[in-house]
Image 1 (cartoon, rainbow, N blue to C red):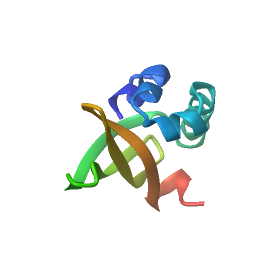
Image 2: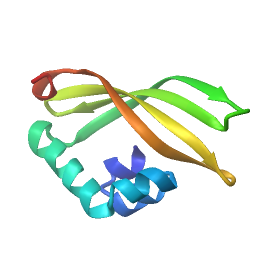
Image 3: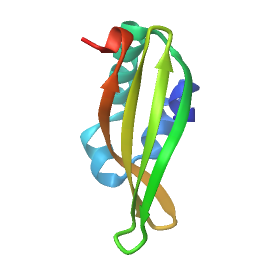
Length: 102
């Protein structure tokens, strides 16, 4: 989230697990972020929420809220342990407000 907030799309892409990185290129990620910014403005802040860890499966989930100039998105991300690093594998939108409510 810090990488996206700072506009570092390449850095954000490098934090993805192999499967997601193959599905979503840096150019696609840039387009997704640009679309969100056009729709609701830049990320003003983010807040991390509840997290769960399954050490046996080497997976975790983290809830978070992104707040934009005009609205917010509450998401859950799924992480997988690849080597020594935790990588983003999936994100699911839970609740949208403001410009994202449509």
